[in-house]
Image 1 (spheres, rainbow, N blue to C red):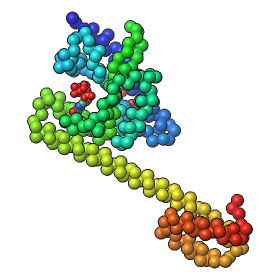
Image 2 (cartoon, rainbow, N blue to C red):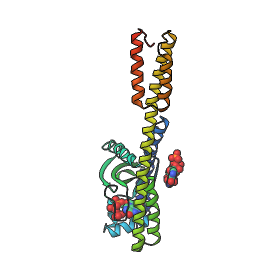
Image 3 (tube, helix red, strand yellow):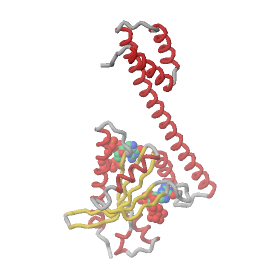
Image 4 (cartoon, protein in one colour):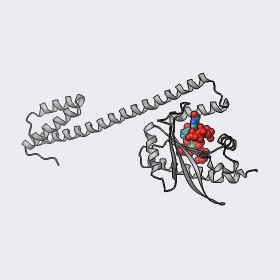
Length: 266
Ligand code: 0O2
Ligand code: 0O2
């Protein structure tokens, strides 16, 4: 039987277009509200006819049941950091039973494939309305980091080039390269965490410094010059080298001094 491929692929093409728009708009919404987006970019493709035929042959799927293939429609969501993958998975789970149905989740991040491949796959069922009627189809969503994507893209094209006959020693080197890419992911996450911690510390310190400054000024302008030189000197030292704890102590000390003089902050 000669299959009408155009008609067969139509719902898959539509699903890919719709899902790309949906996930890209999540990214846009985060960015428009100045929030960090766990989605860096989204791509999608309909599987090539030759790959569909090959996969069906290997899986012994009859030509009339090609709908059984789960990845004819494929969406790829690329994240900056490993932690973002979990956020994207949760976003998709929140839609379960609404505009899509989750059929299966495959965690190839905690269960790395033999090749070294890492990604989180979610198989969904997705409803499309075409000019020729309605249809529920399978689609595969792959969620991975930029580093995982870098590795998988090159490994996939090497496999394609060598017709899946990559020599064992090269396979081992590719596996090692996958580990190196994952180490890079981990290091980037660590660097980000350290920057966030440093930023948070800076915000806490800046706020305490502002509070202390206000109290010193109030004490000064209210004419209570007791120890004001000593206080200013202490403040200079703590401001430059002090810990959050030292700044908190000084703030408390000034609070007590203000109470002594019946002063109140406006
Ligand atoms: P934006 O605002 O940059 O996200 P289309 O269906 O025509 O919209 P198509 O043909 O699927 O898109 O495009 P493709 O090649 O899949 O690219 C998808 C989006 O991901 C594009 O953004 C790319 O700029 C962006 N992108 C960023 N980095 C990469 C990368 O390393 N690889 C790929 N493939 N894409 C990347 P938009 O949609 O133009 O707009
Ligand atoms: P395409 O269109 O070339 O991307 P199977 O294909 O039988 O191994 P299964 O059970 O159908 O696997 O689904 P699985 O493993 O959850 O997902 C298959 C898809 O994941 C592949 O699609 C790849 O896109 C990706 N993938 C899985 N393993 C690897 C790997 O070792 N290296 C790379 N680069 N990608 C992998 P296809 O079938 O290759 O189709």
